[in-house]
Image (cartoon, helix red, strand yellow):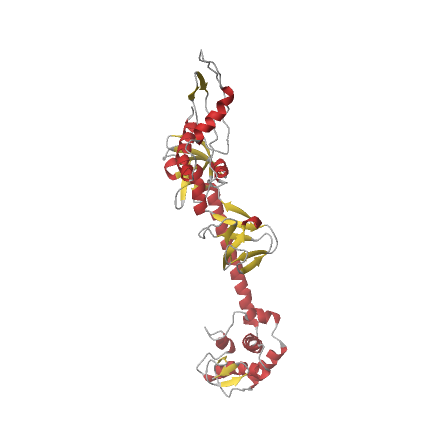
Length: 396
């Protein structure tokens, strides 16, 4: 019997304990073997008849059991079975979760690294060999072969060896994936209702369109027929009949792929930085070329664009009062762009489009000396401070 099949047998033994915890009947395996060989039974009370049966190993919805030699006796006759490896199906009770065997069938030859970050995939089955890839937390690999303390695996574009000490397989790999991988429920119908509780009589929190991807809330209580989900700030339940639930697992990344991804990210960051610098330079060029009238008109539009005309002139007057006071910068641009004084983040955009006519006229009047505030140098939203109220601002 091959080392790989010996390991599958070991995986079976380990996972059988897990399945037993989910109410697997202790006699199911024996029952399955008896049913399997019923057709080969030979009734010969006076002599022993040997029948050799070759069964090709197959993947089933149950558990793996590698059998090299077995004697079954019924009455006065004997049936001697000799073969290489066989796969048998273990029966389960109705109490077992209905999809558990299907999940085991899908995950029987899967492995995951039970680590916080990643496990190296190496070129050979020893710790001194070259690291060629990373099997990260949440990545799934397929078992290819087994060596002493090592698994040969494939995942993504990686093919190599991982230490068995840091891996889990079969049902344990599935349960680890359930813990560390994200699970999503995709709506299968239009207008799916997210309810506050797992009941059709409970409050509707949100209605989502078909195709919406909802995060499954694995920490919530599991209730038959319902799935606990999160959508934005909303957490509730949806009917399981109307969603498709999928687990998102990853694949290993080769060190070459990782290096390429890092280089691509660095290049993207460099280009983004260059574009930001170019945009900032262009914005500054717009600001630098603007006249005092345009600058004051733009800040009037930003700060008081929806205020009555008198309020617009008053904002422009505050700028000019600071310029003339001697306590602030002695230029319009110096006053407007002083740190933390005016809302200038949209200045270049307003200047590029051109301030609206009323703001331009208000700026011209303020520069000419019009001042509804009587020399005041500050303003803020009305109601926040005592002072002169004009429109929705208080000047002080």
